[in-house]
Length: 318
Length: 318
Image 1 (cartoon, chains in turn red, yellow):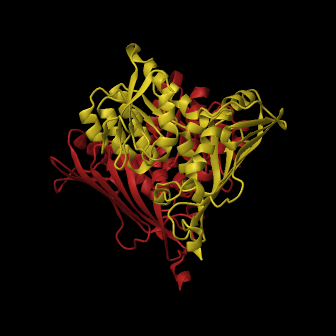
Image 2 (cartoon, each protein chain N blue to C red; image 1 turned 135 degrees about the vertical axis):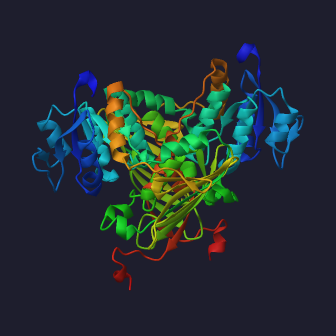
Image 3 (cartoon, helix red, strand yellow; image 1 turned 90 degrees about the vertical axis):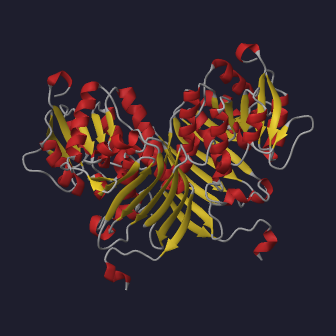
């Protein structure tokens, strides 16, 4: 339940893969929230009012309490301002903006409007992230390694925006790893060096190595690669003064000193919506820029390398 | 005067060009502050204790109240932590760190230690910046243009670190422009697009065009170029609903609707030290990350272009 015991009436903007796979079932399963309208340029949902733009939606549906944006980051800022200026609570898919200054501006605007802004990092809600954070909390970090290797053709078929400036490239999944690492490690992370590998025909990197260090001095090496066929890897391993931990499958599975812990079911997006309902009820915001800040820092200090061109369909490369 | 009416005993770390040209005379001219020790790997000053490292200085001079770091940004973080952990107030040359996460970490550390952190932006203290801000405060910004064109061989002779990852390249002067723009424009700036021109033999850009927009929607175009021989340009011009303003010579000269305003003398660094003494006395910090954030955003969303190689001595290019 939300403010005054009412159910939060939600509008979803953007009806792409992430919205259909994750947001719609999660909203359906969230007590205290109800999907009331959609904005999408191309699609609609049976039984729900649907509008081509967020502006049309906001004009036609004054009873909406909150908006979730699932659109690509490059066009999210204007939509976010429109929602905040209409007095709506706002939930953002990751990354919360195309630039850091955008996110900072949205945070100030939400505070001025007296509404909730929730910049979500869905990977932080993966089943084993909380247990990993609690296990690491009392220990001294010796070193950590982040390995995020996946097949971009499988996970981002035809999503040209990931290759355009601002699309983040391999940091689009890599920011998930950073959102987990910043949540479980007890010290802040700093980028020391990075190597960015740009396909000769693309504006964003297809692979990267980022050497980080905790503020306490422990090395944290991150390897990102979008050219991985066969088995996919989303692992974070941490060596401490009192044992070793591995988070695998993107935070779903926790192994401590070689022993796999009991796995809980995947409820990432259900947890996000439960948290959004809580934040609205409490009149609070949650805007953590640190994962995007580390990505920007990796670009800022990165050494650029040009690698072979990337084509969406592998046969085009021949 | 400072805490308890005492004079602030300062140590200067790094004795390069900026320290000799600006910091030493400014400290000399600051009531309430006195230079008490130096750390420099290569140089010393007659009549002052000099140490090879900040650690040696801190160990030998427990009576030091505050430290100013004039070292290049890539090695500043460890020095800054050493000063803060020793309980010293800390003043940082621009940029305040090699990465945003570093600056954020220093801010948290200073707050925890209960000391003053002052991340300086010397260009904001240029004579005409304050008058420009006051003139713009009541006006609606229609557009702005930042033109920062200088000869890198003249201003950075033999400074190889500016071309290494993290050295910022042409954004090293460009961040001065951004520090002024963020100080005089009433709305926050956001990076929409940027083009970064990297010499084929260097890791940082020699030129850049950054298309920004104010949060209120006015376009702000920035052009940075380090290949400018002949006349040098450091101009910001702003069109408003009520006249036009130009700040030229890096903030030294103000022209309103074509009429040059009375110029004041250049006291950038004297103002910085006066402000540092004030901040320490008030127990406050001043850490504005926005200029560095805009640079990181320009790298994050930038489209990279490779241009002809750069050599320090022009004849080497033939």
